[in-house]
Structure formats: C-alpha cells, structure tokens
Length: 153
Image (cartoon, rainbow, N blue to C red; front, side, top):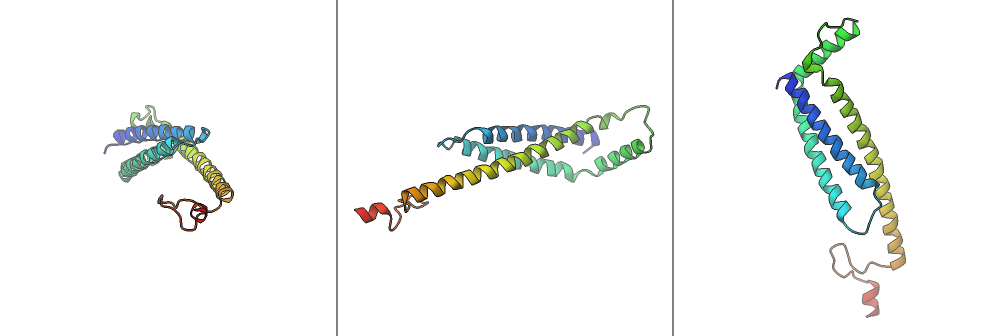
C-alpha cells in the first residue's frame, strides 16, 4: 500500500472509530432504564469497535513505508531544516495523530464509565437479592430449587 493511501486509510478508520466511541460514550452517559435497548446498542458498538481495531491492525501491518517516511520527516524537522515544499503525502499525518489521541482519550473515559456502570448494576442486583430473599428463577429461567415460592406452595 502506498504511503498516501495508508495515511488516508488510517485517517478514515480513526474517524470512524472516534464516531463509534463517541456514540458509546453518549449511551453510557444516558440514565439507565429497565429495558435492554442500551445493552443491545452497547453490544453492537463493541462489535463495530472490534472491526475497526482489526482494520487498523491490518493497516498498521503495512507501515514500513509509513514509518520510514515519518522518521525522515521528523529528522529533517528536528535538525531545523524545513523542506521548501511540504510533502503532500504527509500533510494528513498531524490529523491522524490527533484522531488517534482523541480515540485513546475517549476510549479511556468509556472504560471508566463502563466500570462505574458495572459497579452500580452489581449493587442494584445485590440489593434486589437481599430484599427478595432466594431467587425464584435461576439464570436459565427455570424455577430455582428451594425458592421462597416453592416453600410456600
């Protein structure tokens, strides 16, 4: 893959990833409801993220030319030399770097939000179990052995 195409593909995939991460964050910040819509949406977004991460890994696998060109550019910038003509193939690189940083920040925050949601859900579940006594149904939906209902019947 040539350098321009690699950078454009990175930019495109990172833009999509930032969009998915932002939708995930918006969902996580909404108040939880008893329905499963948020859970299903979060699951769908997780699959989208996984696909995008795989795409980014494929592009990264073909980064030899990208790395060499960027190293050359960084060394010329560090030595104080500025090329008279900016390399058009690297013009998008600052945008790609910013998108990657933005995706990283949003992803870290989403991880914190997910941990808070899990803790909250576990507390609610524990409270319900304490209030209701033994579960009437097990996780598979069958009547639980020794449940309060069967002992009263």
